[in-house]
Length: 235
Ligand code: NAD
Ligand code: APR
Image 1 (cartoon, protein in one colour):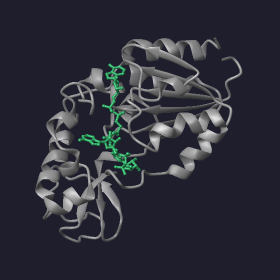
Image 2: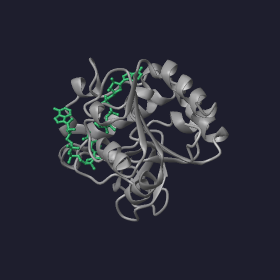
Image 3: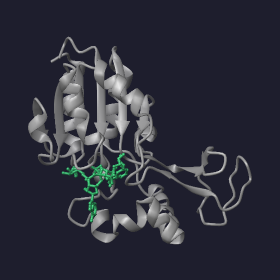
Image 4: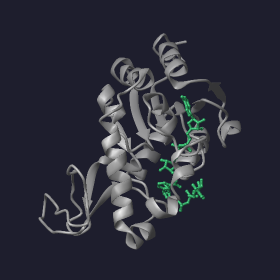
């Protein structure tokens, strides 16, 4: 590990689980309570925008009740103390990485804190509760705001920058994701093909666990701080 010059980290819902944020595909996960086709697809939004606004308004209000955990804090520490290149890519739309101090961060599936205007394409801070009649803070148009969240079938954000970083990193960590969703689930193959050492840190083996060079299974608040310590000690 002493030679590590560039790290790319991917996180999923599992890193926020111990903060009290529901994951998607675990027992009692979000997709056991909601049909993703109703609340996480463009078609669902056209069919019933109120259901989608209610879903994201409820999740956004939930953010006020949770806080970053030791795993989020360990990644912020790693970014601050690691001397090489560092990029954190999250599939999560919560703001726990930022609140823990992470800065070089990409939300590839968007953010609960952000609203997107379909007219001027500006992103703005989400009003208290978004609804069909909300107006865009940037252009004032009424009725064209949507959650700034990437839904099924839509392209994630900043993929070029993510692939460029993956091609140049020598250590790729995947933390708290089930490896069910592409393109995120393919990042390990891409990083490995470009020479990176790849490690999965997850509660249990993910869909793609066999592709990783190493795997550490356990709760994120335990295994992530321990692994960050090893990287910083050059082990
Ligand atoms: P995809 O294969 O990524 O999505 C299909 C996903 O739907 C599968 O991973 C599966 O886990 C999930 N799925 C299928 N039936 C489900 C059910 N009943 N309940 C819950 N999950 C179910 O293909 P896609 O839908 O075209 O998505 C690809 C694009 O959409 C990618 O760019 C991805 O980043 C984006 N995106 C996907 C998801 C997602 O959960 N798949 C979420 C946000 C954004
Ligand atoms: N510590 C570590 N890992 C955990 C913990 C924990 N305390 N709790 C759960 N996990 C792991 C689970 O084992 C699972 O593999 O986190 C993973 C969560 O997987 P998902 O619920 O599928 O969440 P994620 O992989 O982030 O989903 C990807 O799917 O629906 C979309 O947009 C949604 O971004 C999300 C994407």
